[in-house]
Image (cartoon, rainbow, N blue to C red; front, side):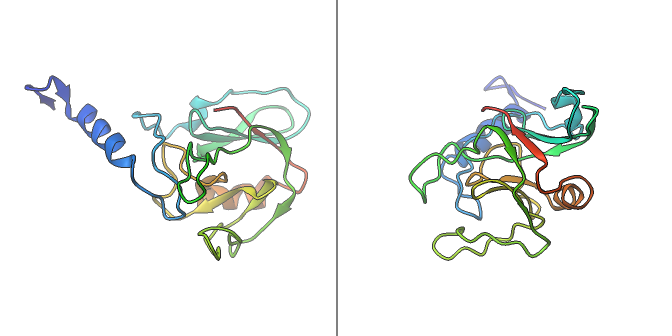
Length: 185
């Protein structure tokens, strides 16, 4: 559909409205919804990541620019991919940026379906983080409720995944010591 007076498609108008309305919105854990980067939604997240990486060890790659995660086997082949929501440009409740740290890390600890944040929401914590896989201080890969994994970066620094993806990673792929690579923003 096309809006004749403005010369914009309905899709473009919706994207503009989403961006404008998101500037003051807050996610359930207090993160800002202000960093949407894509107006194209693809269910084939594997097309957003390299098909192969150097062989040697299995790893999970997260790319905040394309909002995707990928699991690579020790042969360097992508075996599964999905939507990932990384840290926000700004967290008003903390008064600072909340980007997920970029670089190479190792999974330090694993949690189950009952994993919860010790910090968020401020001041007492308790936000559900099912199937958490901590890789850098308080930053983890973890599941969240539907609607909290989006085509944008809105978390306090953790990498949000669909619960089914986090459960798959936790029980079928990741061990303590598994490499996690977070690409730069």
